[in-house]
Image 1 (cartoon, rainbow, N blue to C red):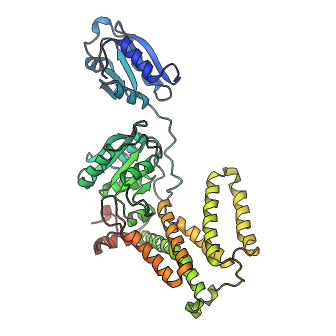
Image 2: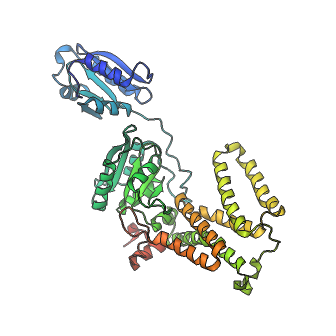
Image 3: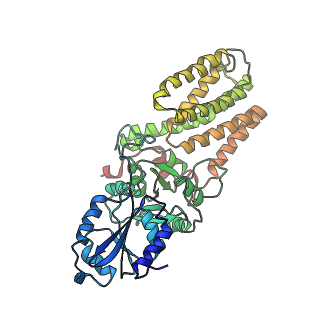
Length: 469
């Protein structure tokens, strides 16, 4: 429905549509501008009071004979503000208003004047708790979309950097920013992403980027290996944009979605590039090796315990030193779930109680659990290493994918012994090999298809482009 030139009709319609009588934060002010009645709508908490006050002061000086004939002429002459738009339809105006834009209706004009004098409650762009680095910038993404785009713009001062805005959700109308370099992006992939977002039929992106990710890639949900890389660091996002990747920022989310992402992209971290090449290479290779070890350590140990004849003499010390009261497979599975229980408890524990409860949990699950006979000390040792190893890489999704594959191998090894171990390893390899990125390309490129030059870049941290002669 388009606006009428009769202001009272517009006010009656909007009051009913916005339920102004019950919504205390939907504020409207009736004004007189140039001898005409006007009405200003805004959301309390979203409007910049100082900016609106200055604009209203200008309106109070307009004389009746100086009033232009349409809203376009009015904005050109009397709205001394940069971000101003004209809206013809009431539905568009309501979405803008609920997003924080102040909307002005003037009697005799059939167009709404949208003044983007909004501000959002926001925290500081401090270093994210999740993606910390030993060296590098200490700023991070926040929940306000425009702040996040500004952090990327600050690092890439190139006119070819494009940030397109889209919306999704019938009720939420969530803002989504797609960031890319025009001359480097994969155009077919970009068009596919934009088309999928435009065709989304969802009520709201309740879980922000996770909701969007599941809508963009609805297939193969049973494969636990992540299809996207998430980062709360603007330097990581800027570097990915310069590499030709697409960054998706969702309003109310402090993380950037990077795509397409292979398993090597997900394993990479900012620390690899904030140190010299030899140190960055060591950190990267260590992370890969530790991730592989976290997957295979306990299944291999279980296999050797079930087949003592396979243990070489130089590894004889790995045998159990105490009597076995509970089967090893049950010890390992119980500890897998107990560790997740402790992790969930740590998330919900108040900060003031974190230290004492951690001490209690360490004593009870450590010394007393072994003395009681429920667990052997070797089982506790290997599971402690696996738990710590899961934090060697930043991606929670990849860590849990490794965990699910490890549990699968453990169960198959306990049931079918050597053959079960072999089948479990093959299934884990297939889950990685046959996985695809959102672009439909290999998840383990440059291994498949093989590219030696790209493989060197994945395993060895070379010199940065700006250091080359």
